[in-house]
Length: 433
Image (cartoon, rainbow, N blue to C red; front, top):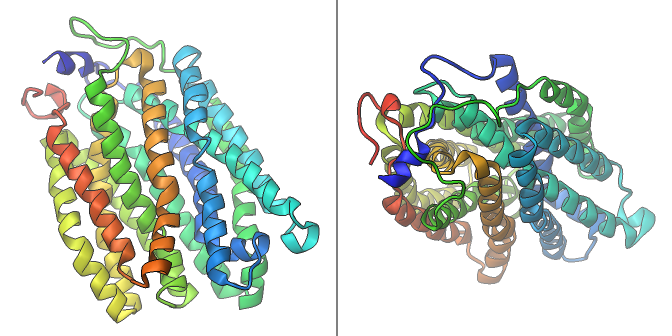
């Protein structure tokens, strides 16, 4: 009961600490940061050829994915430094710094000459910029999610926090649309040579608008909350451990599903256009699933909305990949992507809501940022490389499915031990567990 007491901290009924425009600024900024970070993954094959040339395409791909993974190494550091800043001086300045650093890194990546032009300096620069990207993104999740939680009106906190994942879905959707457009308008040679630079450059153009939106945010760190009895200043070990396991499972699922673009072209030898269309569908599934999961979590509780779609996703993984690997058609790829993205979005939204609610406000930004960054760094950063390596060494097209099964199973176990965190006002009279 003590944990339930410390989390039931809602603004007064009907009140909201931020306008729709300000909330849009948080979500849009979050979406742009993830767009910049994920675009590297979607163009992994082409980036590998530009900066890590090799006579063996598998080696180039693995080197590119290893560089993609390098961006996860500095996420815990960014989470601690920038997340702590969010708890000390405010959510708004922390989010502004994160966004500015991400803009600087993505501009550098778009302009870095290839290996053929400057030799070994090229991959060194790319790795350094990926480390800066990771630092910036590591600090983004904590302050922005804390802001959404604290700006929410009574009974809508689940929906509001789920906008964190909505932003990530928007990033995936945008990256997919850009990829489809480029593959349709550029020749195969131009797509491989400059397509990824154009995609990254589009993110650079939007950076000034994101900074303007975030500058107008109302600070929520020192805003009063309706508190009950006592509140801890630091989260319990139990919440941190379960949060780490839940996010590790979620990030494994997320990054393996994001890898479907590369998997479809590099492993299943499907057309690039189909692969990028799957990315569009992946984004749409997250955009629909995340707010739906947040809304359902407000209505029926966090645990139910975590477990039901999470279990269904677990059961569908193996048959879905078996069908996809045998059919190798657009219909199979799009269907598998849509169903898994929707289920993952619903369950994942309830997960991030439950974790955020069980973190006390004085350390909410730091705690969430660090737990999220650690899980992403260890499991998300290695997921795509591990899947590609397993596929190459086992010669099994089902390697991603087995990897997903393990990740989803770990998440289900953690969900069973997670306590209900929904406040009374958000569950039609039900008491928190």
